[in-house]
Length: 160
Image: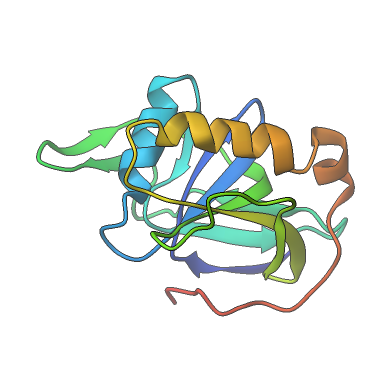
């Protein structure tokens, strides 16, 4: 495996497929992760995950050692949850300028793996539903995620 530095994002697993949630500070990454966990997702990491590219081309998100199992719930504090690594199937970018309608996912690179990306407008009470639909509609199927994505170049969203 290659890589392993911290990546500025939150991540949950839905049905065994990783959803990497990116956006600027305060955009709602942790809140979306919490809403998805409430709907059955499992936590991989909050506000920082360790990304590794497996030899077979799969991109994995791992809980970082320093914050594994911790999720910040705004106005409440830190809560502890079980965590597990996940193979990334979709990058979800919280973006107030997101297009209302798209015909296909963008393609982005993370740690050398090519992945689909969807931008979602973050200020909506149905964001978790939109995230689940984005994963269903545009995420790599479990079989394709297992086979690995196309290799590409990072875009530099690293913490360390």
